[in-house]
Image (cartoon, one colour):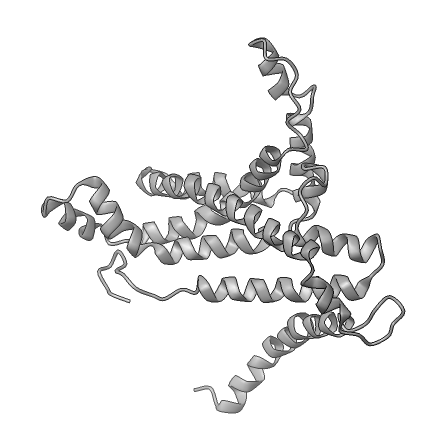
Length: 274
């Protein structure tokens, strides 16, 4: 039997990690947000955030994060569903996850070559007489590459939710005369919403702070909150404004996590309700 003191001792590394690598960095960012370029205390950074420039930037960030999340979900859900029906589903799932182990910068540079004027996509278009097309530095290339990078993180939680779904519930729905669409909308999807919400969190939240892909793939034509933070810290050296944007970005992330918070419900494959 573990005593109360023993359990408390085991929790020390956890609380130390949270303090040093979660609370302390956030507190430091909040601290720097209260100073201007000259190191003087000010609240102007927070006032400036509500100007039209940063409000448009925030709306743009949410819009692109929304598009990336929606397209990822559209592709990920049927893919995860088909994976649960395959014979070697764990192997196929592993093959989908493996690309996420590759360095993000390497994958980004690979797409620069693929979408470039002399890349295979343009070579394919030339065969059909379309001529060279500028695919890089467009909204399409930015969203496509972002979806490719994030889609494994959308597939995995949805696959886990679908794989745990009690198949007897689907059989019961069909026995009662429900169509495939009715079974999906009334049984399958409602009981896998926790997986969908986890996928949305895993895609939408990091999409808000993208900056490297916007620079390399979109050519800085797409500006997000992450890009603004990078520019404030590395270009203008305005750590105060950069920290202020980061504070609001953290607040937005927390709001998204609250909205997409999971509530256990449904039935797993062993028939237990949660």
